[in-house]
Image (cartoon, rainbow, N blue to C red; front, side):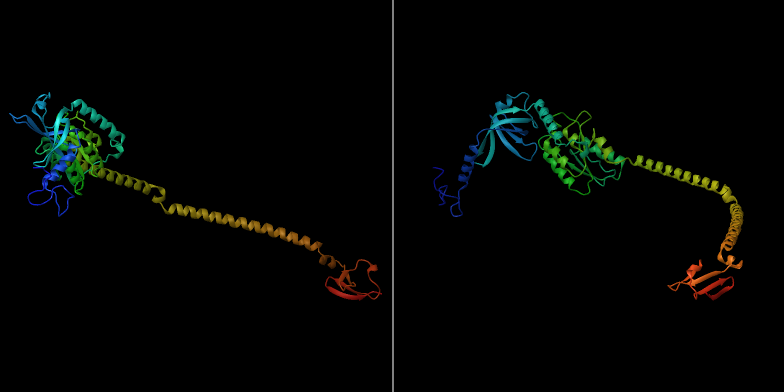
Length: 418
């Protein structure tokens, strides 16, 4: 029976477009999807193996290939002899590059990859990729010291991202609570290695970053191999930490370990114990510092009071304060002396000026016309043609019958010329 034949219930198959009155059966939809998928051809796919299923007595092995930076996975089938030919044998968490052809199984409507070649990604290639990513992130400024933020001195809440029941979680919690018993932690347990680590850590980071009660976030993990620490050099995780609004503290592995997360984080601690010491202060040290500062303040205050007291005693012992009336009385005597001197100087000046004025007045009187008249002289005046009085200086100035005015020392008389 052809797949394009009309089904027994009377509905059409793919003879026309799909409508509510002419729907396609499941087999037709599945076949069309398979046709589109098979047109893709072979592809190269990179990912991490999260599951390997190879049952004895069968020729086909089943793998689950997962994207390390996203929550996406696909099934892969291959020949068991292909897996047996890989040395060293593949294990879960290994990074591989697969050459496969997409395949759609009509019976269940599932998609899988049929692998024709599997290439493990060696540690050398992984480290080379990490180094290329390191240079890229450094060029973008994600490692720059000026973009790093200082964690708060005493955070309201601390977010902790770490493995469940891990030694790193125990170290951070115990050491932080020993240093500051009132510290509040919000712990989010995630995978810290393998293909599921990056998506879970990024999701936990986003959740803690959105919590207003969390002032600092710690990402902690104990030591491990280079492959185990590769998720902490993932580009997606590094960019998520760089974009977080909350300061992030990195505490991955031991002192020699240095994943890219250490360079992007705001603060890098060599161990989880170091992270616990970095996020909260030591209550005993702070108490001792408070006592020390209080003692210093007390000594400083006492020293200042003593200095002011000594200065006040010195001021009180000065003559101006020991005998405050003495300087005033001495200055009063000086004022009286200067007033008397000024009075004598003024009187002397007045006497001298009065004498000079009298002398000038006597000279002026002797030389004036009144003194001359007193000695018997007279001033004769006549009226000119304009009616003005003028002094007669010559007989030629008047004619007979001219009215004259003769001024003497005690008055004036009138006369007429002949």
